Amino acid sequence: MESIDERIQKALSAEDRAFLAQMKDDGSLYRDLSLLFQGRTRWLSALAWLLALGFFAIALVCGWHFATEPDLRSMQLWGIGTVLAFIALGMIKLWFWMELQKFTIVREIKRVELQVASLTDALRATSDR
Image 1 (tube, rainbow, N blue to C red):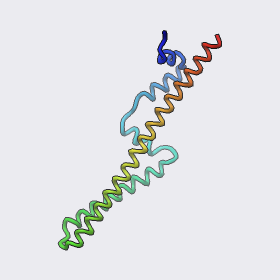
Image 2 (tube, helix red, strand yellow; image 1 turned 180 degrees about the vertical axis):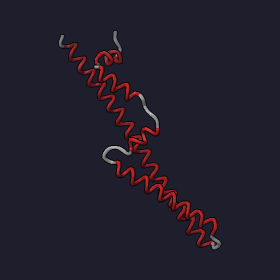
Image 3 (cartoon, rainbow, N blue to C red; image 1 turned 60 degrees about the horizontal axis):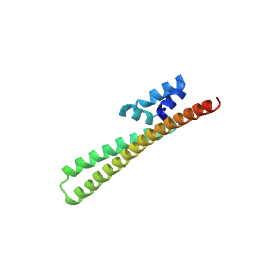
Image 4 (cartoon, rainbow, N blue to C red; image 1 turned 90 degrees about the vertical axis):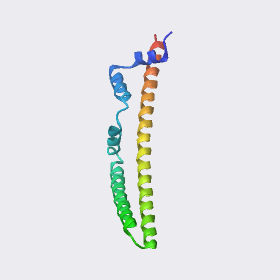
């Protein structure tokens, strides 16, 4: 008796096999990050990247002033600015990681859709005989 994986592999065309082989390569983090800057939302990713750089610069400036300020009240305000800038930076990074996870899930769903469609075609072909 054939396993389901063997039936799927028999049902796939050469083009489908090449596509699945390409998708099996999960790729690197750098390739996945480059996917963030392609497609419809590339402007949003670029804006978030610029905002992240801006918040990092703000955090560095606030941290420097916090370390060099002689007055306690000023130190507290600069410290609050540092903390808020790092929180904003963390939220932007979380958004990027959620986008990466979304792309991974979509890639897996497409892989399953292709396999189900190929198996359906194979089952129709065997039932027509």
